[in-house]
Each structure stands twice: as C-alpha cells, then as structure tokens.
Length: 221
Image (cartoon, rainbow, N blue to C red; front, side, top):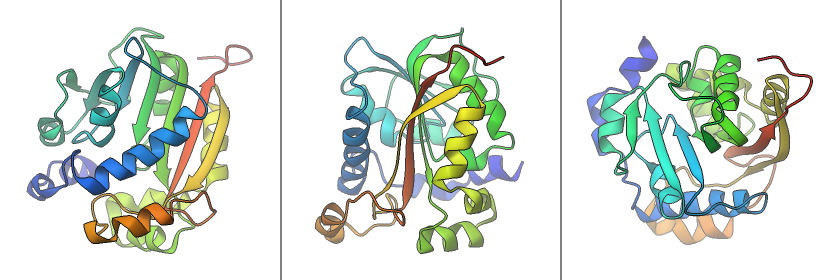
C-alpha cells in the first residue's frame, strides 16, 4: 500500500514533463541503444507498463502505436498520450501476444512480485521485452535507494540479477548494458552538455537497460 501512496502523492505534479530538455535527452539516449538491437515503426504495437507521466510513452509515440498503463491515476493524468488506462502490472488486461514490444522504465523495483510481472509482460508480448532499472553499483543510486523506503528494492539490482530474472521467466536476453550519468528529474539543465559527454556504457552508470525476446521452448507459463 505504501507504494500506492508514494505514486499518488501531491508533489508528483512538479515532476518534469516529457518535453523537458533533460528528459528528451535521457529518453533519446536509451532509444538509440534499443534501436541497435531492433527497430520499430508506425505499425509497431508497444505497451508501456508503469508508464507514469509519459517520459517514454511520449518518446515512443512519435514512431509507434503506444498504449500506456499505470496503477497511479495521478501519474496517468500527467501522461500526454491518448491511449492509456489504469491497470495493475500484475494483471495486464490484454490478450496473449497483443503487442510487438512490451517496455517498462523503473517499474520492477516497485512491485512486490517481480517474477509475476515479468511473466505478464512476456505473455502479452509477441516478441520483445525491454526493461530499464536502477544500478545499485552507482554510488548516488545506491544512496537514493537506501534512503527512500519505496526505492529500496533497487539495492539488489545488479545487471546480473536482472539478466537472471529475465532468463528464468521465459525471456532470452539479447542485450544488457549499464549506462548514463543523468537522473531525469534531478539533473540540472545547465549540465546537459556534461551528461551528453558522459553518456557511456560503464559498470557504474545510473541505469541498466536489458532487451530480451520470448523463449518459445522449454518454458511453462
């Protein structure tokens, strides 16, 4: 319940919008890395799970058919895309393989049963599942996760841990990188050139980005 309260708090209205320069740079950096593995276009059906106020929903919607779901009505109300619905990631109300790509950004460390959510994401994906999560080996991310109770599950999120979770839940990891320096809601705008300069793949980056596809054999839903 404390996670629900966390994502319905009034201060969320002050979060940066998807069109903020830092947000645009942050999302573009991640999309470039995803495009190295697979591409998408106007007919691609993409589900953004835990879409929040639309950092990635907006970015993907420029070139794909995006559906966003989140269990926070407050966050969803801030999301600018048209196709969105209040929904629990544990019970995605879609048919099997309804989407070409299922994506989530900073969601899994907030859910109680990550295995179940990953299986749900796999179930509704026709092929790809993409996750972005915090890197506990980054000193600033470690401190943030330690100090904020709702973020504390991030303390176990190494790249190896996430890779293993995906593989165990019917997903074959195609790419796994740890990258980036900027924190989307906190990074000062005047330091944006520095964030671009330091947009590396390195073990102490801010986030893990893993791209996987469905395993069709030797997995029981």
